[in-house]
Structures are given as structure tokens and as C-alpha cells.
Image 1 (cartoon, rainbow, N blue to C red):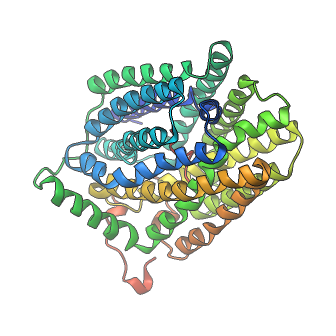
Image 2 (cartoon, one colour):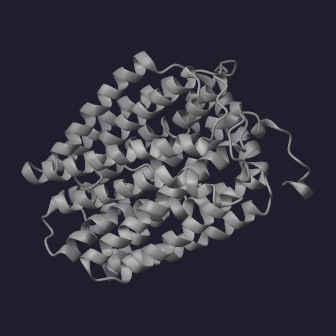
Image 3 (tube, rainbow, N blue to C red):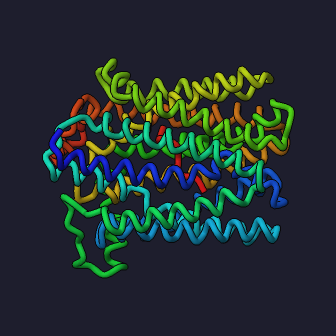
Length: 438
């Protein structure tokens, strides 16, 4: 690998490290934080649903920022928006605010994350292409998962321990501080490479153009379309399960105030993510097609969720939590590489944001529905239902596989295959990584 490519990857990994460390301070205690503020299970997951609704509302407008102003500017806006809204979350908890305020601030949190979605991955892929990188994208995204897994482990353990030693609000303040530090780092180090922003159109015309490009290079290309259509089911269930496992494990453990155990749950997932990220490239090499890896991981994810829901033993829940996190992590880099290699460079951030939008749509509807199921029948039953919902998305992955897109069998990133003209329609040849969470 040439020095320029190493530098690009180094900056990318530091961005992931800082973002994930900031976010993971609250990942192990977020549901407990919302319940401690006086919300019911339904309201807590409805607040998360408003977060994902914010991502749906703002995904396309903020995609305009990444494609017409620049990936760096989009990232900077994301860090500062999330820092402010995280501080507002802390104030709502402090005041035991009514649900309406939680819904509003959750939407603004979603705005912050839409500045990130698509922009950072697009920045990486474009920059690597500009410095003549010809290695495996799965390997790069896999290293990213290792770094985020380590950051998640450190942040979630510290978040749980700090919450138990102080209170549930302190990890949120730490998150806001780290985001400010990442703003300063990106301001001086992050540079757009291999991409020239198109500033020839006004905001409204640019928004329409982004939507048109999303449809043309996303939904109209069948191999991409089916991957995008699978996203709501995997993402919606993934976000719910991640947060529902916090109180569920405490329930199985027998002590609902053991916040460090909730942090440990996120830490276990992070270690699974490290292992999955390290092995994703090797596991991908066992199969001729990328879709085989993603479909197999999705089926194992469904199996793990069903067993988690039916189980009543804490230690066995931990075992299947490891399995669920591992297969999720293996699928992530492979899905990322697959969809990136099907998209032309100029529309990469746009279509990736569109993919994220569909994933967020799943969170809007699935989270409150499963939260209500938890209120009525318990967390275990809601996880079993979640497994059934995730299963609905797998036929879409099979449909993408049947298109025989060259990206399905690619083993290295050439930087040009996505731009190749498509075959005629008659012969036309993401479970995402851990979804963005409030």
C-alpha cells in the first residue's frame, strides 16, 4: 500500500475512533437513561423512532451538503449538531421533561447523524481511488470495524462504570465533549480528495437533483435496489435489539440497577465486532459471491435473536449476544463493499445516504412497535418478533444476488467498476453494520 493510501486510511480510522468512542459512552445505558427520565418502554423506543424519523426527513437535504459543498463540511456540521443535541438530551433528563420535548430533540439528533451518513464512507472511497488504491475494500472496512469495536468496548464499559459511580447523565456530557474534540481534528486534518463539489445549482434544484440521482443510481438499478429495500428490516430490528438488550440482560441478571452489566453488554458486542471486522475479509474469501456472506450472516442473526428471546439464562444470553454481534460485524464490511462498488463516484454519497434513509424508515416503524410488544409481553417475546421481521428482508438480498452484478464477485476495489455502463434490463447482471443510534 502506498503512503498516501495509508494516510487516508489513518485519518478515516481516527474519525471512526473518535465518533464511536463519543457515541458508545451512552450505548450501554441509553434505554436505562430514558426509562430513568420517566418514559415507558413504548415512549423510550418511540423517542428512538423520532430520531430515525429525523434521519428520514433530513437525509436527502443533508446529502446535498455532502455532494455540493463537500464531505468535510458535512462531517463538521454533524459533529457540532450532535454535540449540542446530546447536551440538550442531558437537560431533558435533568428536568424529567415530557415526551414531546424528547421527540423534538430526537429529531434534531437524527439531523446530526444525517450529516455523517454516506459522507464519511464516500470520502474514504473517493480518496482511496484518487491515490491509486487497488486493494480490498472489505479489508479497509474490516479495519474500521476493528477500530470502532475497540472504541465501543472502551466507551461502553467506561459509560456503564461512570454511570454507576456518578449518575446516568454524566456519560452524555462526556459524549458532547469528545464530539467537540473530533470537530477540531477534522477541521485541520480532513481534506476532500478525488471529489469536486458541484456548486452550480441552488439548494432546491440540488435537492431535486440528489433525489433524482438517488433513484437513478439506487432504485432504478435492480442490484442496488434490492439491497436498499432489505435495509429497513435489518436496520429497524438491529437498532431495537441493541437497546432492548440493555434492560433485558439486567432482567436476566436479576439486578436492574447494575448499570455496569448494561455497559458490559455493549462491550461484548464491541469485542464481537472486533473479531468480525478482523475476519470479514477472510470469511468473504470462502465464498464466490458477496451476497452469500451477507445472506448467511442475516440468517444467523435471525437465529440468534430468536434464541435470545426464548432463553431465560443470563450466561446463555451472553453467548448468543456474542454470536449476534459477530455475524452482524461480518456482514457489515461485505455489504458496504458490495454497494460501494455498484455506485459511480459522483453519486456515491447520495446513494449511500439514500440507503441509510431506507434503513432509518425501518427504525421509525419497527422500534415503537417492538417497544409496545415489550410492554405487553416482555423483552424476550419482542426479540423473537424482531427475528421474524428481519427475516422479511432476506428475499430482497436473494433478488439482488440474481442480478449477477460484477460487484458481487469482485475481490478488490478498482475505483471504476461502478461507473461502467449497465447491461440492458433484461440481462442486468446492507444487514448493515451497527446502525447509527442516538
